[in-house]
Length: 266
Length: 315
Image (tube, rainbow over all chains, first blue to last red; front, side, top):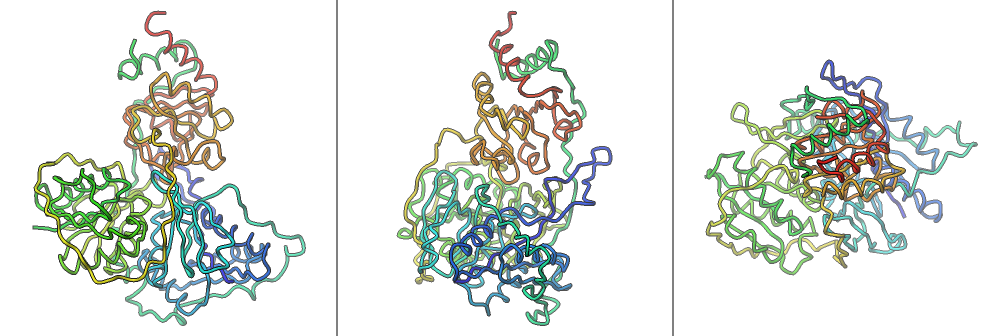
């Protein structure tokens, strides 16, 4: 059984700093990390591989060549093969174009399941898994909390999905894209000591436009139907912040504030 | 007259109706005809607010099959040529919108929080990848303009006495479903933090004594919410998470206890009327957003303020 896992490298947005003096976001020296939800999905796949010898796990990433070290790291953790779709002409592609690029690669690949996260922490549009599924005309389900792993080896798998007011159960037919939620319960396997220095470059493959053959007008900023027209810093800083101590005086002031606003009544 | 199609999510009817306000902000009040598409039997609330109503898939699992709804939207668009398609950014709305955009070969903007107009173009504003930046995005492709709209941002206050016309929709069979609905287990209903007037919210600094927030929420007649870190550590359930990946809230009062105010989090409380932050670090980003900052550990603050409130005005 072959599982392809979508893996996106994203800036570590949790560690962005905001410079309130200059009203700008400090983006220098921000590390790239694996998108946490993708990591959860990949962890499920690798655990399955550890427990079943006939499971093959591949990762699929679109991004700059700078992603290589991260992907090599994943190979050392048990991924069989990593594909990096990378081409200068793809830079600036929106989700619509990105999905078409990824789908064109996948059209010629055999697989049983695709795993992904539901959202990425950078864009967070959650478009790509659904749009790739649409291009490939296969089912997709997002916000997955749990799956019945035995089902992966049959034609349909049972999933639990976190929805607005309920946890829903669905059966999804193979092949399909299963998009997971973040989970703290499962982590990537460690790299074994003997694998630390292993040369894994042979298991990493770069796929460029010479293979996927899009015209220039179909990809990148030029090919994208959506265009960012304005970017601005959303400043919701207040100027009149009062700093208080947690002493009688401070507590009294908080209390009076609550009273004035009708939060507490006397 | 412009035509706007709105997906009515049976799990979020009010949020779906609110998109009529977004439609009015795009084309002006009374300048567009609203078409509602709803899986299964239409809920009573939608009559009177939409001009037209199309019910699809009475026998399919109530809108959970995103491919089916996307096919329906495509078919309806061929028949009616909509100028805009709006979908609430609910769990299933977010699966339906990207598929429908692919079928209509149009660009899609996710999680729109504001509509602007610039040089006769419709600018869809959403929090950008950083959360703290706003990106205004335009659709340069053909019609329709398509977006998923963040819940709890727009609020419809227009007429509810329209004569809603139901349109018969009997399309040719679409593709075979690859998803089968099995069952549903409801989550507790009494805890939608978006409906609370007061939120007592805990962050990383209070993970270990998160339970103490309950008492403060109780005396303030509010609810408890949490930052992502607390939820990720398993100290609070995900449905009370505030922020970009959680819920957007707009309470009168937001008390941030031990929350540093990561950009992700701050996006969720932008519309809070008043913010009180309790944090020993006055440089924490949350502080500059707050009306009041109590420079202290939340563990020290909670019992003291509870005591003061209980005492009332007369000491």
